[in-house]
Image (cartoon, rainbow, N blue to C red; front, side, top):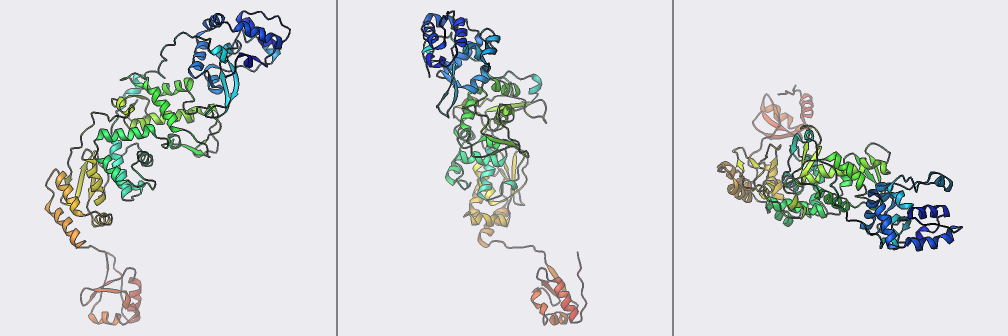
Length: 543
């Protein structure tokens, strides 16, 4: 950082006299170049520096502390948003309004005392203007120890917490469903499921982040096996840890109602880490207002996802609009919306937070750290999750009902052998069919494996007819078919014999009796015309 000499160079004599007056120093030199050296000698006295610092109001001291804690400098846009701007005043207006005596902000208090400067530095993440403390003053400044900063926001009102939504581990069940559907190459849109609040497209990105899917979005067999056979605590901890450390799971690009365009790059890990740090300072077992939390972040740490304080280069617009959300005025619609999404989305789905709302139909208005927070935050499997000990039920019709707390690895395999039915409360129903079994055979699965699983995990005795059904299908395939066909019924065998001598003979299929034959699909009109040509009247009878 520049020293005090380079910080004050370029200021006119009027500014230097204002600065000197605040330090109790008399300037008698006729111009700025001659006044500056004497002023610097007088200022660089440790006792005088400390006297000036001690006389500052708390807001100005807090601004200095913020700079010191950040290595002596902060991006100017961020510093100005926190502590105010320096008004752009010409010399005449400055001398008339005397901002040294009537500062409009903590920033102006420091500016007119020479305690901070403004300069363009080429520092990461990118070159920009910074507020800084001159080097030779930085080593002389000693601030009283600051207290622990208060948490962001404030507790929620009682009305905001009437309807709580406690954290659950349902994301594990939805992950099992999605993994099975991807293994079967089932369209995500066609997966029968209950209302979960977790879009499958988002969950798919999370499973990829957790290395359960390959680059083609197909399950990686061995990793999926380990994941599904792990305890629910271990599995949830795996997903949570993968999310915490991911650089590719980009929540900003997942925000509902917003469209991100262009080649600009944001850092989702930076935003996620900042939010988790802010949440770590909240009291446990206390409902916290979402609105108040977001509002306080806007005031105290608005650049949590933008270290350069850049609000103009990201091309983000509302869906259905051509207008881009740029500048700090769009903070609530972009940065604030991201905080709300993280709180009510991933942090809730993964079990970090509980949510609450005024009524069952309202959006969440409050949150609190869940009982799993401490473990998940440090990558440990949370304790207290239920065991997967429930058993399946098999009906004589071939329906297999798998409870939510049956082993996930079992449900994954059952899903690969069956057709899926609509999800019921706390239960996943499936049904055996020749088509589903044939699909399983093409994937290298055998019905003996399914028989073994059902016998091992069934709450009732597997109906013998189902065992026979699976065993016979394995050996013989489909042994009965029910088909819809068109029948031609004629008055005598002679009519049928005459018809076979016409061009319509190619439409006749299997002869069932002397006067009944099946027709090939779509041929009824052709056969009627052929009968008419040889002198027989026919009709189509709809049943």
